[in-house]
Image (tube, rainbow, N blue to C red):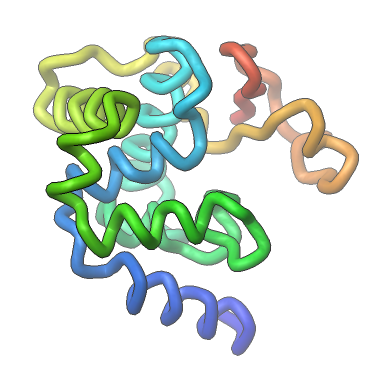
Amino acid sequence: MNDKAKALYDLNIDDFGDIEAGNLMGLTIYGEARGESRAGRIAVGTVILERAEHRGWDGKTIEEVCLWPYQFSCYLPSDPNRATLKRIADDWQYHVAMDRELFTCAALARGLMNHLIPPDPDIVAAHCCQYLTPAAKNAVDWWKSMKFVKRVGGHEFYA
């Protein structure tokens, strides 16, 4: 990991590292997909699980995967979501009780982690670990060398 990525990872750990895995996965789903349908949120959660179970280079735990540099835009300092997520992290119990979307994302995360909610089967079958919004396609090109798996709401998934 280069110095810039290490600094971002350290910042993410400082700001979000005290959050329990299920809550952090829920927070990540909230940051990345709160405007999506249940299927879209499950798809993002499935990607988190696939990364933890199969990739390894960007973490072997839910916490490492969620906070790894440059993997989830909601944790980038330039993303306006980060400030919102930091406020939530600083008072999780209050926010999860007051914000229905956050509560739902956290419940989906726990359901996925505990095998009570089935993961997206297409994403699992493809070992799909990448997604982006169509708007982000102009800013990156990694997706061009990958296999398109599916589109769910505002996200395209690649393996």
